[in-house]
Picture (cartoon, rainbow, N blue to C red):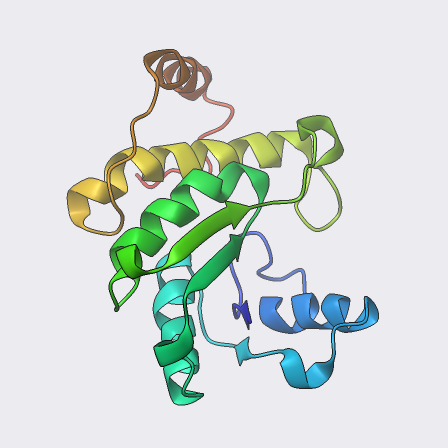
Length: 168
C-alpha cells in the first residue's frame, strides 16, 4: 500500500500525490498493479496510519493482517513507529511491526525532491521536536530521546538556522 496526498516536503514539488509517485516507482520495478493498494488523502503521518487502516478495512484485509512493514525516510523511523502505535485504530500489539528505510547517508540525502542539506537538517529538527512534543498531545507514544541528542538539538535550534519545521 502506498499512502499520501501531499506533505511538507512534496507540497508544490510533485504534480502527483505521494502515493502515486511511490506506486509508479514500484510498478517500474516490477510490482504487479493488482498487488498495490492506494490511499490518496493523507497529509501527515497520523493520517497515513488512520486512512491506510480504512483502505485495508474496505478491502477486507484486516482479519488476515498479521504484519506490517512501515517504510519511511531514515530520519522518520522512530516517529513513524511512535505515530503508528498511537494512531492505528486496531490493536497494534497484535501485529508484527517492522520499520525500515532506505540506507541513505546524510550527505547523499539532499536532492531536488527534498532540498538542500540545510533543508534536510531543518526537517530532521522538526521530526525530533515532534518526537518530544507529540506524546504530550496524544499524537504518538512516548519515545526516549537520549540526552546528548536532545542537547545537540537545542544547540542547533539556538543557532537559528534550522527552525523552519518547528511550530511556533
